[in-house]
Image (tube, rainbow, N blue to C red):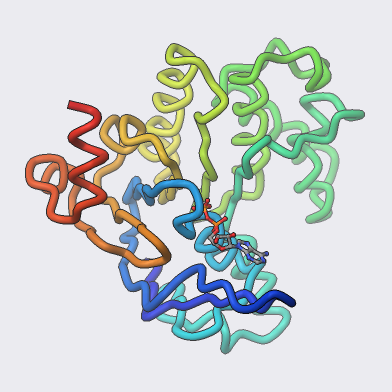
Length: 245
Ligand code: ADP
């Protein structure tokens, strides 16, 4: 379980302070497909960077299975990081490497032997439906296929959590649906807890079970997707859901 407790993040700029997150609290249970939804500038990416340990909170805590990330030593922190598979916006694939090599990359960093790398990459290629594209380069793939490679790479070392930043924002509706189906598959087959950051309400409605609505750095509403869609309480959720209806 991930527990976010009174999390705040303030960026100190030359021109002044930017408050990106204020007193945000929620819990992400194991097995959730958890949606974090908000408009541009709401603080979603900041939250994701805090969750995957790229950014230090200014105040508050993130507890991973009860342990405060801020209290971990260097080695423990590396172990915690291993539990987080991340798919960033724009996929961040290595353009000079093949699909196979991209997915193998984190395994090589972990010093898996060659046989294990081959077996694991084949498994992942099958999971994401790209077994026939192992030798292609990212430039030869569609957006949806690149997203699948990024997902396979994020899952390579068997993380407990999969964090996805706007996984479908660059995709057409059909491809979006197939990526969402894949995320659902990953959740069910691998038992990975999936955390999705998005500005698209339809993404949350289609696959998430729980959600928070983030506005201006604050969690203004949270609960099950069914509850919030049935009776949104916050102005921002009412606006978003109203727009969809
Ligand atoms: P979102 O992902 O919802 O668009 P962000 O987390 O990127 O929101 O941004 C939240 C706020 O924090 C914005 O006002 C943004 O300008 C500011 N911000 C984000 N990253 C930085 C940074 N590295 N330095 C200063 N301000 C930042």
